Length: 470
Image (cartoon, rainbow, N blue to C red):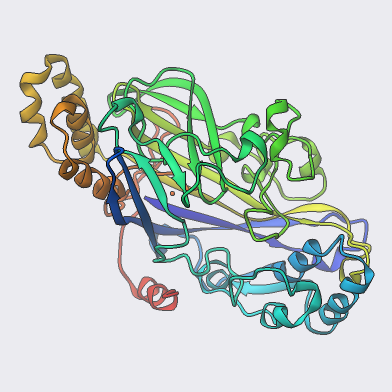
């Protein structure tokens, strides 16, 4: 599996308070090999398993266009977050914050890719937050700011998952029961806070042409992808499920999505994630505002949405429910707007500033696809060949054999399956299977596959691994 990140470099910050729109140029890709490990597994009598996951990223310079030392100019997020959190708190609370920010903070920062991603950078406001009355009751769990700061190698960041094993009912396989010991989150109201769908790696067999759903801990919510097309991938008939406007709707298209507004209902295209991101004015969209109301792109310069490059999809073999090809693509935007009593942001235009967009991709290897083709044929012959399928290696075979021989399942078999989930496709978590990642690229049609990137360990990779041990 791979994580590919693109940055938006702000090219005209000195023109902010003029009539010139903010302009951005895309930088990247910066590619990382991604590894998953399930840890602290506990199997329960109700046929569920509880686990945590460790995600590790290693920089892959051979598949990147640039280095971790590339400089990016962008909005300084910590002071904007502080201003956003206190925007309704009144003059007497905001004025000390405004004074501090004018003396010690900057509106923009220019940092390296490594700092903005995993290393983090120090900020005066984070350092003294506990001493400022305006932020005394605000939980700031980090001592630096970085989009993936403290995440590399962490077993606690993604939370604690409780998932159905399918031992009692194969149709429950992979269904997420609870996240952090609850069947709903506190980040969204009503049904928008319910935890529904898969944990993101396995789906029950017998998929139909309706939709698939999964929970993303990065977004603190469940997402649903409707059926998009039927195709053939590596000789295997498959269904593709793809995110569309409904995934980034705030009630404009479907009134049931109104509970995603978070107090600020906006045109279709961005979803308010501020409650999930420690109060920062973070809004999630598809890359380059794909499927969004033209309003967002009209506020800035440099957006070029392209469905071939920016779509979010999962391709599944329908009989087994095994994911074959995954491209989870999302963009993080920060809302900048005038904030009364905070002089740094008085008179600024309102705009959703694109910060980064990323894609988490995984494609079934040719070897696994060959095994899957074999098993799809073997499955027609039924139980007599069950024992034979169990000796064939590969995650796809483990899953299918376990399903074909469900009466023989045991906790030992399930534990093998859970440990092997790191070889399965998973979205980001993201919301985000790995082999050694010969980067079999994502397939936009059965005949189009990108050439694999070479996997190589070099000085740049070793330097990244030593720099990102948080």
